[in-house]
Image 1 (cartoon, one colour):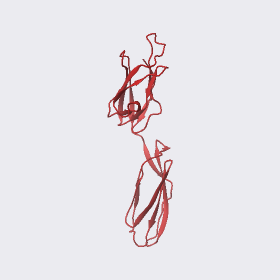
Image 2 (cartoon, one colour; image 1 turned 90 degrees about the horizontal axis):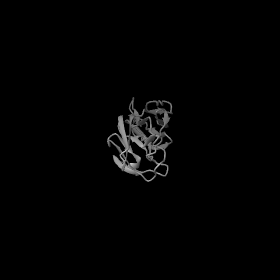
Image 3 (cartoon, helix red, strand yellow; image 1 turned 135 degrees about the horizontal axis):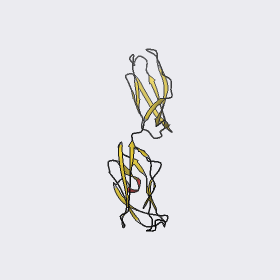
Image 4 (cartoon, helix red, strand yellow; image 1 turned 90 degrees about the vertical axis):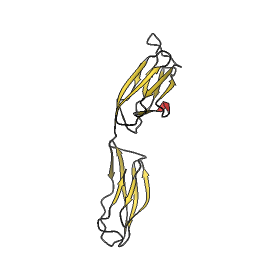
Length: 182
């Protein structure tokens, strides 16, 4: 059995672009073997193997080209050891991959808004959630408003979230703050 592919690194909560794949070969070291049972295993706290449906280990069968693979999603930062073992012959391939925590940031697309004390106003705030510098779709965004500020409905499209905010005359105190986490 040979390693066919493996990610060089994974990120917590993100499915790796490159799967962990092995190729099962006959004793001649060249001929691929289909229909061979291969057990995948990983420390359950370290990563999730797609082929196992969330379990720490499972058995999958090689295709006609001798390939069997699984996606990997990091669960916690640190080293992740993943093993594929041929069930009938015991051949084994193990890889150790570093799981890093993705860098997430929130970038405001709207300018800072200042409102004169006692005034009524409504404006829209927009932000973009980034992961490792690229827009992150589906990121949860939590908006909160301070005294005298009210929030409208939230919108979200391809990593960009927006919300309308209103201030009612005389209800906001000086220094009222709206916050967002994403």
